[in-house]
Image (tube, rainbow, N blue to C red; front, side, top):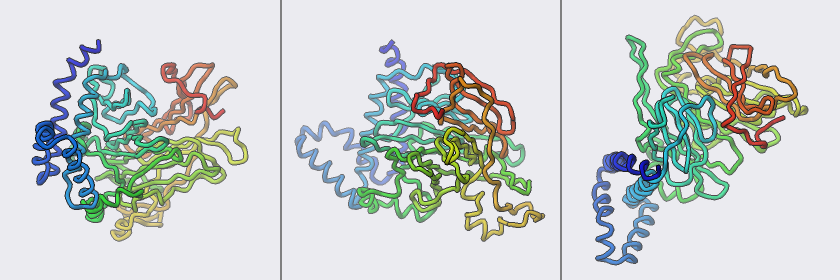
Length: 435
């Protein structure tokens, strides 16, 4: 079986890696081809000048790149990573599951694709397609430990040091909607190496920080990176064209012609946790936070299309579990300065202008727990999934056990009754239970 898988995958993976290399040559058009030639001829060069001299040149190029003199090392580093990636996928079997209803640290999905993390590799396939459709996805060097997705945003936490991960994010699609027919389109970018290590992409300003000279700064601990040392639970959100519109407190619809992205970071170890967030247009670190409900200690969270779902307990009564949900992001809160300049915000709930978004947004809403007996146990592992257009098109999931059987409670956001679905293949760790 191992040899069959290898024989089946090799020709495809060679084409896939070549595609990554071609994209890299276009991105680094002025230096990429020459570096690629040196890469292809590296064994010949080693024989001519010696292995030690070749290693010295490589180290020198790394240092020169770090102080901003030139960028061949960026290209060389990528080519080295692609070669390691190709060798790994050639000797690894794809996942063997076809469908998942819940998101975990190693299984996730969006409205178009399933994603899996197995054997230190990330795979994707069309939603609910057969196992023969699994396709590897290139991930930055390191050990991927957690994956997450929402809309056309995808993230992976990569471990490069013990007890520390770096969050990498990418776009897995480009959304469009026809203005005449309203039909939704999305291109597939899963196989493109468009990973971002910096969660800061404001036009012009972010370009300055991506200049070669700024590579020297990246040698130091940098606030541009989202680093997790076990303190946070990272969650990625994308409220975009698929969501179509936002309904404000005055019941006015506001069409989405672009996406709103954010990374949420829920503190896990604090007595009174905070919910931090990073936005691509905000200063590049977790310096902003969303207010949490009063006297509430959050122990787990999830987000989809800017709608945050939390599970926790009362501050002075840990035995009383509580659920909260709220749609919130930088734009909805009224923090976007461009919206103020364009007169898109108003505090007047009776304003007749359809283009003005009414503030403040709706507050946290408590969600009733499922009816349960003494055998039911709830975990901090929860999901929220966008399943349509508008604020209320969401599905809530709580992973739990009932009569000793592992599964999850599920319901639509506006429904009152929860349903228990058994998933004995997805076991819940004892440390994840809250009661």
